[in-house]
Length: 487
Image 1 (cartoon, rainbow, N blue to C red):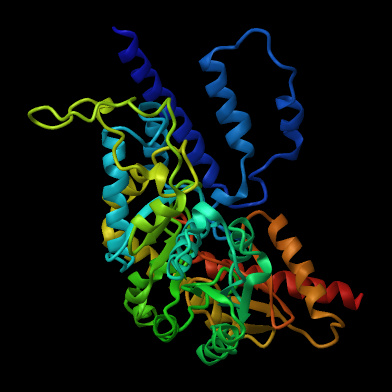
Image 2 (cartoon, one colour):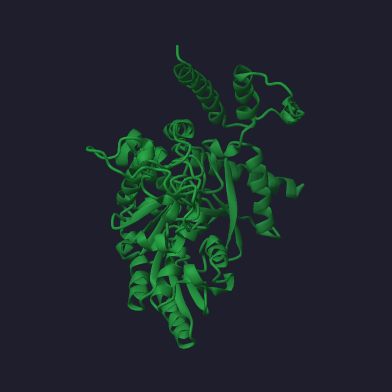
């Protein structure tokens, strides 16, 4: 057997072992999942080895010590943050890419699937008028989109900002509920975090178009150059969806770039019951979505989409490098390029901030091939139904209060009781006991000053029934704390 074939067989063998270990790990849903007596930290805290132990030992320790003591994020009951353990299809595809195409460039199947999957993802999310680029997460995805917006805005006044820098005061408009990566993007892009003007929201935490119009009018009179208007298509805090069409029309009327942050919520468009909330998405000049959130990809996969990808090329292009120029042969043969080194493929390195980057599209391709649009639609609907079920349970019980009606798969609620001096502190205590139980692990947030328990159902392994278990446990712990308080 050749060495290459032996390596391939070895890869398959150990991938199967890892898969079995992961499958056992994510099925744990009770407090016995992690054994504190195993002292895994002490076991792993070894000096640098002079001699290796071999692949068999590594595989065994990965399963028994590393995977077995992994993060709660992969568990079915984890609803804390908008992240999840990758699906099997995503994990296998990502592992294959790390060996067969460690970079996303050159003329090969992985580079081809990068572009194909971006087109599929755009179609899935109702933004087929755009072309895309993968990056590591929503932070970079928003940065790339707003970098394109910055370039476009300055070009309208005859200035190449990527070449010469910012030369005047600017303004970005975003909901008061926007993700904080918007401010960070403004800082990194040289606009300044204080250039972000936060727009007031209504009682459902959606941006008020009337307040946006007033803000733009004031800033234009005061000589600011508007860079972009940012709308939420599912805010991180509560899942709120801004009135996209109204905001997009205001942006267009004022000739301002319109960006939609759909890192979490854009796939919600697949649920026909709420699809009308996304009306106006076709007005967007850019949008982002993170496949590693609701779609179930391994962490490290986000996508930026723009109406004109050439604007990204002008914003992020690199200066020529001697070691790259001439590295590939662009001379097509009779049947076009045939070797991977005949062409760099789609030049993603000139569309964003990453040069070195793994292929990410193969994971998205694998997930969509595995369950299709229909499978994704069923998952989105199931998770939205779970949030609605929590809301129904809350409204039917006098011990609970619905802090905000769910828009997507997030539901914010809290335990209430007479005689409790500080409900925020009381619910924080419930939450700490809840997550230590290791079965139901939501996060908390504050809505209008009220600390709420905030489950966000996005995990591919989260199944119907877990939402009832979560509410039951909140009630049990709340009642338990009340009884302790009366002693």
